[in-house]
Length: 150
Figure 1 (cartoon, rainbow, N blue to C red):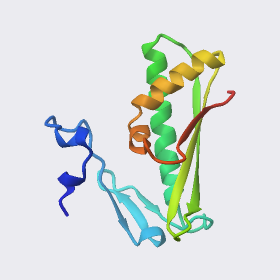
Figure 2 (cartoon, helix red, strand yellow; figure 1 turned 90 degrees about the vertical axis):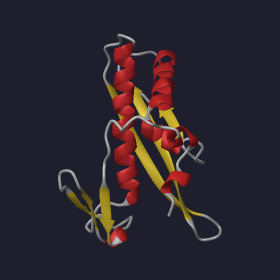
Figure 3 (cartoon, rainbow, N blue to C red; figure 1 turned 60 degrees about the vertical axis):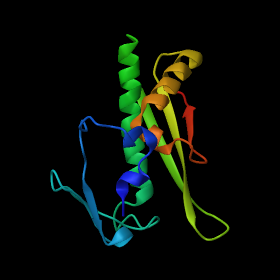
Figure 4 (cartoon, rainbow, N blue to C red; figure 1 turned 180 degrees about the vertical axis):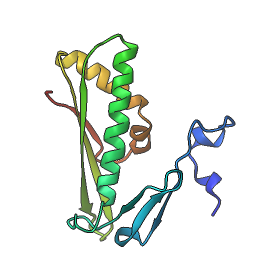
């Protein structure tokens, strides 16, 4: 497989070395485990609806996006000299298409303490445009970022 051909245009021309590279290996699909190669952290994987087996792809996506988006919200607030606490809650739903295939609909709920809704919405929009995971999800159907009360 030629991975370079599958990269988005913005990545194909990148000549600078990456700031960081994570390498995670899955064995066994949703009935196995993932292992992060730098630290050796291992997490068992399981199918949705079977939490006793391990974490599922929906949970991994929710963890990644909530962490990345909230870190970006914090960065945007700091760059704008706003001292406020934020929280991001992500829900990832699994749906079935008429042809039997599956798709996710992820929704991020962002809360910023002490800001009026208009101002908070501006910061959330800035963060969503900058967040690397948001960029990965860009253009996907059903992706939503909503403001909620803290």
